Image 1 (cartoon, rainbow, N blue to C red):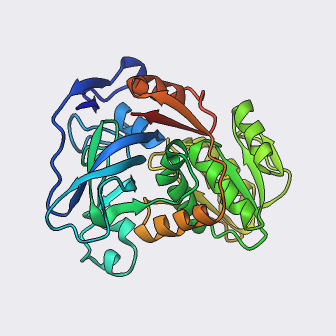
Image 2: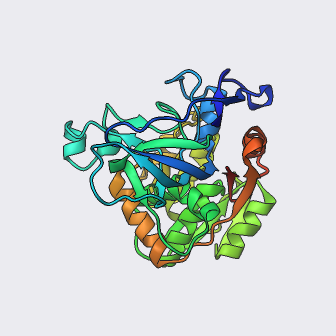
Length: 333
């Protein structure tokens, strides 16, 4: 099969990915073999390619927003999957199931967790394997290209919304408006929130307003009203102080990215006093994924997916890096 490997982590302009011929993986006893149809292009893939995330597996195949069909499985996979079933593969691939975090329903904090496209090969390839227990059932009514961004951008945006502790009917600020943000905004709007978007791209601001945001301004501009909650999707640490300053008393800022540039010095009175909270978001649980995908099945989300051919993986990542993608990007395999 053909796949893309991160051979030389570094700036995307230096072309750290190589397209190579490689063996089709064999499913382990508890795994499904999946013929990849579409794989989303996530900012985390960019962090893996550029070396912002430390190398866990040299020459890894990135990609963790995989929509594909089951073509084989291992001998220990129980009933419930059949040939041709459309399933999804997400970021969280394996947890120990025994630590205090797993036992408490917080498997995203498992010290033994492993991730698709970082610890093991992912979906920038024609085939991939996934433990059956971590494969996702997908909602009906969506094209493959629309489903792929739901599998990380959508799920992590949903968890970020949970972590932001937005009160019912509250005012939510969103910093950065790419694949994850444009889905989280729709969940918040469907639940009655008032959404204000701060992002650098004119196309992204236009998309935000089209989706129902009450305002859209440049990334560092203050929103027109105090915010009850905010989510920082852009991996830009300099946006943390203005986002905290935009919060009303008791508000929460959730940082959704797996990587963030350095945060400048904070002023306690301006940024944190009056019980403002700053918290990170670390991966997701399978329960988060089920809840979000059920929501997507019940509420038809508008997924803005920019399709690239499989041979254009490096161009897709470059466009993402340069802010030329409005919404999400996907590779059609």
